[in-house]
Amino acid sequence: MDDLISQLKKFATEDFPISSVSDYLNDYSLSDDMLNEYAHFKDQKYCRNLVHKENDFEIIVVCWKAGQVAPIHGHEGEKCWMRVESGALRVSNYLLKSLEPLTLSMTEQVKGEAGHLDGPAEIHSVENVYSDDAVSLHVYAKPFSKCDIYCLDSGTVERVELVYDSIDKQLC
Image (cartoon, rainbow, N blue to C red; front, top):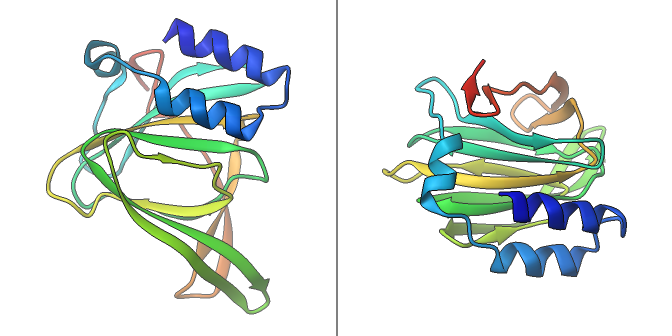
């Protein structure tokens, strides 16, 4: 993980060049032992495990049990990458067409298996629609504490506070 943190610090000085960060994350190998140190699961919802945070970026390991969903959400205009480390996740990317009425168009929907890299995504949803648990690695440039959740059923956008379920390997 130290190598990843060191490289992200370098990328931060270059404003996270998309192709360079994507290439690096595609090639980066996170050992199972390292991943397991941060992998906490919850029955009620997907689990956001903070690995590292500083002003320029944060690294989160997200653990997903079967059926868990991150609703359609935005990333505050910041660059965000997600790589599936184990299991599989369905990733749906969207384009915001209108806020009044709320209109999104799905631009892509993929089954992301281990090694799949998504990003940088502006608006997306992530779901574990499969029977096995899944783990994903997330890198956020310029961390943010709130984001918008887009609810197509009600036509509303809700501002929500983001929370961590564990910090530095310890459950909150």
